[in-house]
Image 1 (cartoon, rainbow, N blue to C red):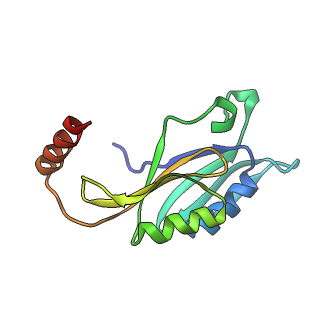
Image 2 (image 1 turned 90 degrees about the horizontal axis):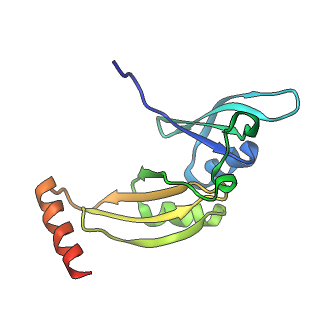
Image 3 (image 1 turned 135 degrees about the vertical axis):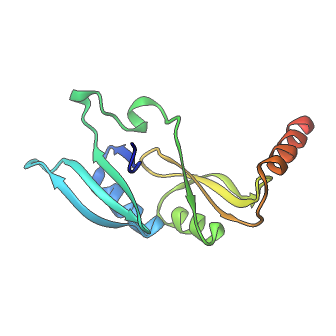
Length: 146
C-alpha cells in the first residue's frame, strides 16, 4: 500500500534552490541534513502543505541535476490560486519563461517556467470544470487544427 508520493529534486546548489523556492513559490524549509563540508544531503520544503524533497548533486552515486544531464523529462505542476501572479513571482525570483500564461483547453489558465536549477514548472489555476470527455473532445479538435 502506498501512503505518500514526494517529488525529490536534485540540484547543483541546494542552498540557492531553497532560497529560490521560498522567493518564487513561498515554500518554507522544514529541515535539512548537511554534510560537514556543506553539501546538503537532504532537505524538505513545505509547498503549502505539500512536501518537496531536494538534495545537492552526488555525482559519485550517479545523482545529478538537470543541468548536468542536459535537461529534464519531468514537469512539476503547481495548482495555485492565481497563475499569472505566481509565474510573475517566479520570474522575479530568477526563473525563465518557457510559455506565457494563457487559457488552456483543459480548463486551466497556466504558464510554464524553468527554475535556475533546470527544473520545469507548469503553473496553473482552474477556470472551468470539465469532464474527461469534454477535455478529449477539445484536445482532438485542437490537434486536428495543427
